[in-house]
Length: 159
Image (cartoon, rainbow, N blue to C red; front, side, top):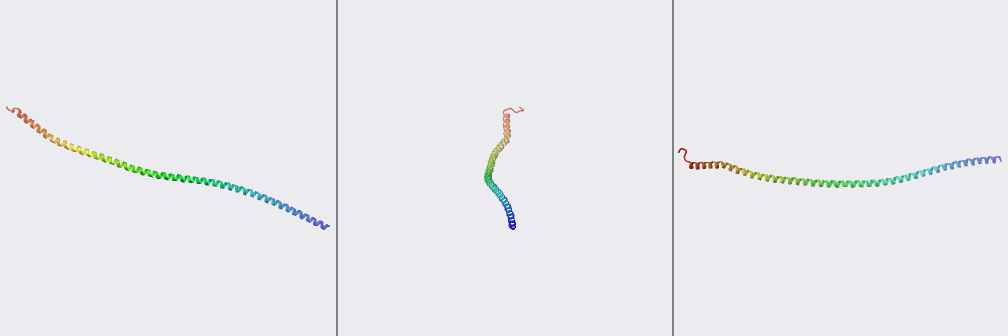
């Protein structure tokens, strides 16, 4: 009987040890389960944050794409203005050439008119000069004719 009691005692101790180990194992399992749940929650939060970041990234990507499109449109508009500006500058240069040609033509016409006037004045001066050169003879001839007429009309001086 004593041996039965000793065996029972050993079995009880073993049972208590096994129960203690089971309890410790259960507690450890609970702890591991809690850790697993915490990790799953943390993982879920990370997934949510990742999704949120992806959504934000997509939104920023679309904004960047819109901004780049706007920049391209502005660049194209600037290029169009540059082309238009070059065309206007070419037209202005052509206009300036035409204006200079017109001014040159006016100047040439004015110069020709002045040359014609100058030539006419030179001819007039030559004519006046020729008349003036002819006048002293005419004056002399007239004076001589007058003196002869007076001499003939008046009695001789000694008489």
